Image (cartoon, rainbow, N blue to C red):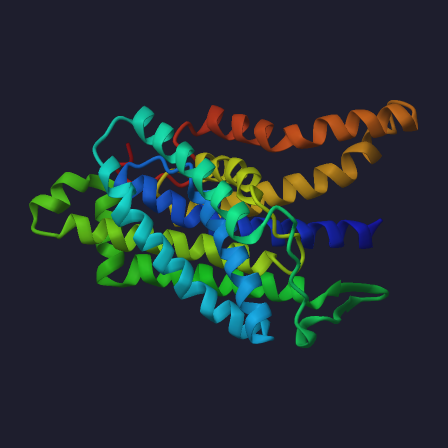
Length: 307
């Protein structure tokens, strides 16, 4: 039982790290630009497809990943220039409708370019083994690499946001965007940088998950829902909040799916416990969100002066 708990806890941390990578960019976009971007999950999908394509073309996952990041960044910048910047200052309903349309366009575009059949990316040979943790417990090395890469990215974002001039502008923009513009900051360029950074983080998450999940059209839709839950729990505009909330959501999801039915067996028969557990498990993250909002309506770590 202890081994099962540790494995599922690590799976929860890995899921939380991936959610953080997607949520960090989206929470900055909403916090700084006041933009609801439902198409952010599509950037996660684009990153996965670019990684799969470039890995197949180069024969190396590492090289494919390195090429996919600037490619996703370029795609995000083009999307901001062509579409997104025309939504700044518009009503949130307009933003929701426009970016939902982008989801449909990008999903269909992926089907046209890559086809509807799922793509697979082999786990790189150097990361194909497992790590011995304790006793008979082993954990896939590639999943450990995802956790390590996510933690390194979180550290890099912390340094960027809290210890650089760009980070100072991001934090100021999340607190009071009009004042930042009034002080002479090129707000359009700042928005471009924020959107490009968010796109690259989402693409990085998609590229990292490609070897363990199938790459298929619409894969970003489900992760987008969890991403919004993470942002609401962590606090809009807060990278630290996105990190903590991502871990909480990942652990609640993985541990709830595994141990919910086991705990319910103490009060009902095995078949009913299994069925009830499968029904309740997907609800746990929303129960967690409701509990957090009850005690902290602005989230765990809201950005100062957040809307």
